[in-house]
Amino acid sequence: KKGFFLRFGGKYSYKSQIFSYPSSSPSIPSDTVLNDFLFNFFSEEKSQHILLSGGTNSTIQKVSMEGSEYDELLRKWNEKISSSSLEAKMPEPHVDPVVVVTPPGIDILTVSIIPTTTIGTKLTEVDSSIGGQLRKLPEFQATLIEDEPMAQGPKFFVWLFNKIVYGGNPDEIVQHHSSNDRNETALLRFYVEPVTQEDGVNSDGINFAFVAESSMWLEFLFPKLLLRFFPMKKEKAEELCSGAIVKALEKNMKPAMEEFCKEYMHYIQSKSHFTRYLFSTLPNILT
Image 1 (cartoon, rainbow, N blue to C red):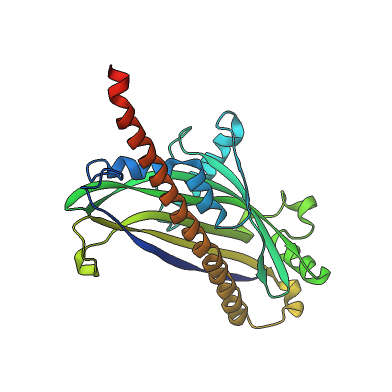
Image 2: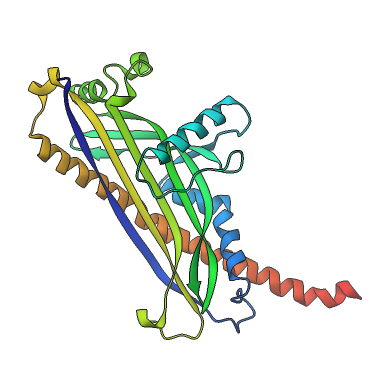
């Protein structure tokens, strides 16, 4: 027996404040154009970067869709979805972007784990009833394709982490380490949820909230030769690590949601000002 698997992770969901849009207001989108308005906002690069960064100072780089690197990542993206229970849609080649995100570290015990992640992003649509009509509303999905976690902290624990994750020095033998010894799955779903009067909203307008659902699961083979260094029982280690993952998801999601909502209000104001300017200048343009 090579050892035992440690599996830990968790889920976290968060809902924004309620937004209300009375269709009679000329300065905000009416119910007939709300669908396109929301899709346009979700498709904004800044909007997506807020979600991908988790409200942190992450660096985000796009992978070029031209060349073999994107094609290989696309293959892994499809494989990741088909081999797991992720509620994610398959990517559309040369349409759905792939990005590399380097966030701040996740603290687990005395070690800080810095996961440089490659993520597949997709803007899709879901059917939902809002404003008394069946609409196609936007949903942004971010699927983990692969990652290269690095550890910072006391030398012994960094060595132990590298031994478990990579089988040794990650710079030297990561390419030789079996992928069957380590597996990670993660998915972010960010979508629009209709809010009705039954939910306590007294308004004649169109009411909705933004909802974020994030999940992350990691599985490592702990080598049998290192059991004497393991400081606790397997179940306790999984409990502690799962708690750290959920706290990290919560820590990132709340500020990301707040920043996303602020950006949405700015977006509304900018489009409203443009609309008023356009209609005020239209008679002069026509004459």
